[in-house]
Structure formats: C-alpha cells, structure tokens
Length: 370
Image 1 (tube, one colour):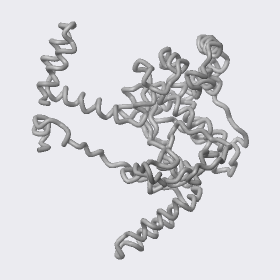
Image 2: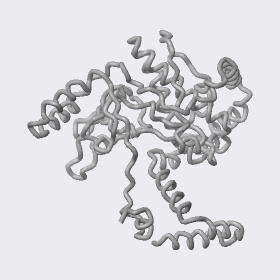
Image 3: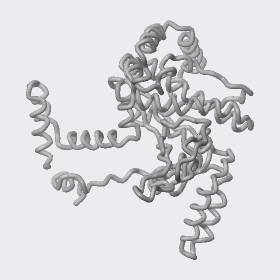
Image 4: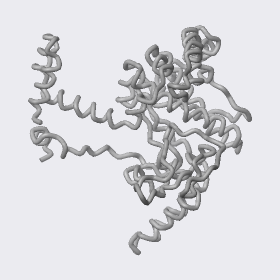
C-alpha cells in the first residue's frame, strides 16, 4: 500500500467531517508516517491485549478514572517496590513477599485498565515471562510444541497447590521469587532482551499516555528504611482491588452493586483523604523535587542485592549455553555465568532498530531504507 492509499483511507473514514478531511489533505507525509509508526509501537506493547480480560467492574473503574487516580496508582506501585527492596536488604522475607504480592496485581490492574480509561492511563513494562520460566520451566509438549506450563505474566497469582501435570510439572507457583532471579535464558523472549539480572521494575512506566510515550512517567521509588512490618499504601483500600481478579461470571449483581457504591464514594473516603494530605505535604516540603518525579528512570531495583539462585533446570540450560560457546570465548562466558547468581546487573537497552521491510516501497524509499 502506498502512502497516498493511507491518506485515501483516512479521507474515506472521515467523510462525514469536512474539516477533518481538509486537515488530512494538508498534513505532510512525514506526519502521517510518524503517526503510523507510533500506533504500531503502541500496539506492540505487552499490555495491548490485556483490556479484553477486564470485568465490568474494572471497566467502570477505568471509565471514571481521573488524573488523581492515575497518580495514586503510580504512587502506590512505587511505594510497594521501594518497601520490597528495603525488606530484602534487611533480610525480612515475610515483609518482602507481602509487598511483592501487591506489586504484580497492581501492574495487572494498570494493564487491564489502560484500554478502558479513555486516554487517562498509559502503561508500559518489561514482560515477566523470561523470569517466570524459572518457576515453570521451558519444557514443551511433544505433541504440540507448546510450553508444558504456560506463562501467565502479570496474571499469575501465588497458589498453594502443588499438583503435577502428566508431564511432572507443577501447575502452581507458590510465590513471586522468580522475579528475584536472573531470567531463564531458554525462554524465547530472552534472546531479544537486554536484561540479565533480577526483574527490572525500574523500567515500568505508568501515567498520562503522553508522558508514557515521552518516557516521563517513570515510577517514583524512594529510598525507605525497612519497617519490620508490612507498610500499607492508601490505594490498597481501593474497592477495585477486591474485584480485579474476578471473572465476569464471578462478579454477581450483588458484588457489582456493592462495588459501584464504594467506587462512587471513594474520593470522599479516609484512605483517599490520607493520600491527598500526603501529596500536599510532599509538595510543600520540596515543590521542585515533587514536580520532577517521573522524569528520570530509577536505579536498577536489584542493584547491590544478592539474587536468589535459579532452579536446577535454569542453571543447567545456562551451563549448556556456555558449553556451546566457541573455545576462545568460553572462559569469558563461564566467568559471566558464575557471576550471574551473585549480583543483579542490567544492560541499558540500545536505541531500538525499526524493521522497515514490512513498509510499502514508497515509505522505505522516503526513509532511505531500500
């Protein structure tokens, strides 16, 4: 399809709006091309299809979302990530797990809500599956070639069951500790990843979609002291947390009515007033620092933290990969492998290369990508 065909399609779609058609006729080719590429990039984000799994309560929450709700979610996520790290540093596994158990469902809520927020909420993150494969293996079903224990990403919840499938793999994962390990090198996504340490929470973006696009919606993850006990955030009390993981069939009329009532009263609730007061105090203490939140990416979450050791199947894969390296570079690879479980590292992602081969010839020629 030539670029003129894109313009013709836009004109056809806007035939009931003469003013918009005039704008489409006048806009430069470069603007159209940039918008096409921007849309394709957004479609490729890991949460793009998550909205289809949202129940009516989550949709209602997203439909009524205000900027203060977005900021509160962002603040809550940064809060729990900060306290997770503080608890790990202090060696308090119980408290670290309680915060980790808040982080993943909250990220899942953001992913489900973004598509229904009417442009209020943008969300981007590094997919969890390569880390999750530490807990589930990358073994595949011989008859289908699919993973025996499929990855669930943000949708996975810890479960006590340890029932085995006919392939001998547990159907349940008891905790999120796999995020505190290096990623499994055998997961297909890992070959394209720049991340080699513990899960990079610091790459999560949540906020106004324009700020997400411009990388100005990073989480604010403050340095906090370990409290010795779980430290709640006001958003933990939001009624959407009670229904976010329910299927539509589980969201009975009575539950939906109760949720709707709590949602309507949320902005007048004590937890919301508590958070609002905290925002005012933080702003008053240092207005410039508060306004700069989100504009820079935090340090790597597991920097200077000892990672958990990967399970045997992941270590065996890493050893096999190291053995396959040509002899002249084997020693270097083994050294890196030996260092991996000790301290988390992160490699900065280089500027993404765009595959222009799928674009029409006119566009490739225009950008010098023949």
